[in-house]
Image (cartoon, rainbow, N blue to C red; front, top):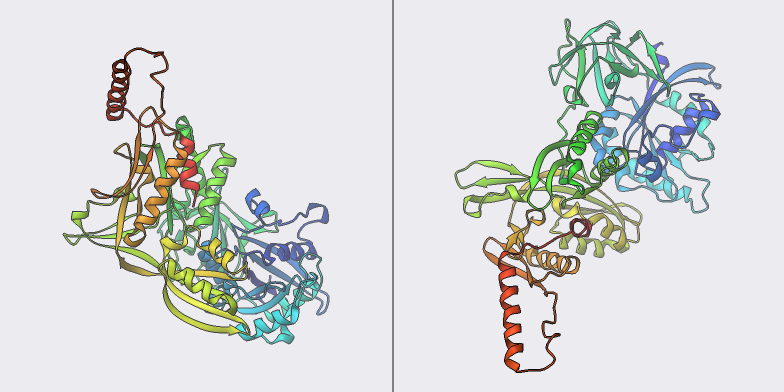
Length: 599
């Protein structure tokens, strides 16, 4: 295909603004699938994506389009991207594979935080942006207001904004003409050395790792000896082709094409999203820009409720990590929970998705420890170590300072809720940076805030404080010194490692008190009195007591001398004292589930 007839574009938007629905209509109108083969969210392959109505894994499809206005045939390479902030890197690599982007804005909600973040990503990749107002068929749609917001924030002329309904297909045919008219064709040299960007990958149990690529220069053929520039691995191409959205095999992918490559790659760790593929014998002089290692933001321990399923959990994690290269894990043990796996995730949604996949696909019920972040510990001897598990924290006497990750938080909100949001951010140790006018009644609040403070229930509190009108986006900023302490939970004077946590000193008492109260509520009473304590080092900062089950030892005494009753009560007292000294507290597994899944 002539380069001038190829259009590579992506669809970007805030979560739930209609990206996947628009993809469905474009596939339908270009006859990528027959009408009988169509279904909602056709590019979302996972059941979780369909049920939640979100895109977790991006997808690419090549479509043949005949434009009735200029009577020309085109190839449209469409990339549907995730809308959640957890998968921001995937979005940035998808945009690097394109020349244009459709920026979809919901006519009922207007511009949101992720809309602006994705716009900046598109602009940083020098993409042609086509603004699209979606859901104009809804009664609550405010088209003129949405146009005005897009014009003021992004600078797009309101007359050049497409107004569509992706659900009904209204004006989508006009949008297709706008795509071939306004989005530039790819640039590159067919006779140059091979230079192809990997923008996604997944694991196929028969063919190994399949890479989705955009050929920037040169061409790639079946049987070619290729090399990954970041990892240094080399392979022989066994298959390649395009997705239509069915897999179609070809002999060669030329400059400007978007397709897939299979090269008997056994593990996802051998390749990386953002890496550059080149020819092994005649490599290109430099890799394509923008590649970086994706680092986990949130860490969490996963333990099977049934300890006999630990081997199955290990196998499940190996299989899932083959199709998700951003998942990091290592094996660990806990005295309270037994054998488990500590995993690093891109964010809470990523963690939630992995947990649900394990439970659905492998039928393993899990206990998850409280999510944590990665801290940097500067020891007294000058050594710097990283810790993501509270139980790995060195003794306080060896710690000089603790650094925790901070993120730059951006909140888009109506003006009426600024006071409530400032209070919310300050309660989560946020450091105020800026307040600016976005447009009209919309304001942008910027804070530096510890990552640990927003991974729990910050987003829910944000929505509650603003009745759902505010949206947020965050990016990693830097590590900062903080007054953090490790809080240990003790049951009957024995440490429970699964409940240990790293918290700010000012919040240590409140969180410890809450944890002790929850444990008192959930742990069943024992034959002896059980103290529940929270301690920093050797200092107890909070305590609750589970009273003993009382047995009436005087029930068999119908009279007689009072000394007999005293003797029985003393025997009971001594027995409980001895039992408390040697007894173990029986903590059912569902207690950990309730405590750790609670806020």
